[in-house]
Length: 426
Image (cartoon, rainbow, N blue to C red; front, side, top):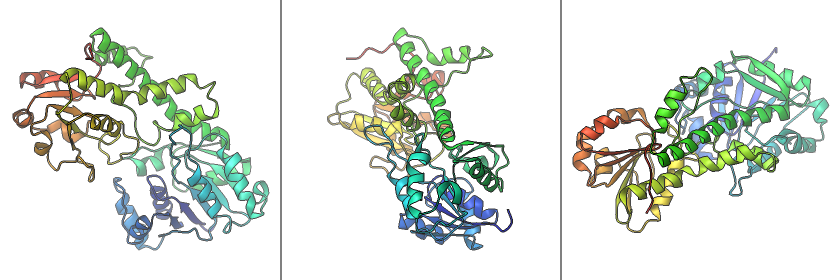
């Protein structure tokens, strides 16, 4: 590509920050842009305010080398990567205000020959119907003067830096020239295959990758409900069914969280609500799980009034600090509505929450029910003898099939497993 281009990354969150650091570590001059002044200030000191393995080391190195700096406004560059959030609104439609604002902010900077990439997960047609009309306000011919594409991230928190490099990638251009140009850019660090297509197809691919998983988790959650009603163990059904060479059932749980699985399918439903019936039902099934777990708590205790309930783990998945769309937060909101209830939370990855306790002992003291919400590895080695001694009623509801039922029963606990046993509500 000749001389390496200057890249402006708009949005320094879970995707933008690692992407900026990765390009910087591969020799590009990067300006990272974020409206959050705390993020900008921290980055310019070589610090980050999100948790991700090895990212702090990489950021510190590229900031010290001068390859990465941050600002609250974009600067004249050769490449603009939009990696801002696309949250879901209350009506289950996409909030595209951040993408719109980011695209609008670069109108005064872009010039002929520049590359504009949307990485933010977006409803199909976003590049064509939202981003391109904004770019046209620059007076440039978008098709002739610019290279525009959608290239969605495919990474998982906890392994972002590894997967940015190793995973296959899709580049959807507004034309072939755009797709090729962006493919060459990402080849500076991507070791996986890079496939090119059109922008709208790339947008739909990203959504369907997460929708596939969401639908299959919904199937597992529905199975869990059915097995409870029938008095059998869904986890056994899943384990034995998966012995079939062409079956791979997912696992049930208290709900689905994160910015991807809990959000992306709604972007498809938004576009074609009359056609996306399975997708919509799957989302509704997974969204129903916090309320289902709440009902189970009420059923096994008889009443939640004036009880002390402890929740172990409130992030949306194990061993990360990410609370986005966590179903455990919704479960806590449901529990809060019970008269006289006292709530306690213990999560080694969370530093701030109104019910957060500093120690396990504080969290379980005089508790009537311990809910395992997230199977952090640290919960594999808790002192159950100590927990049994401290609890008022030694009840455990395991939503992850993580703890040993036989062991806990021998220690005197009443062990309940999501997906096992018949439930009779009051």
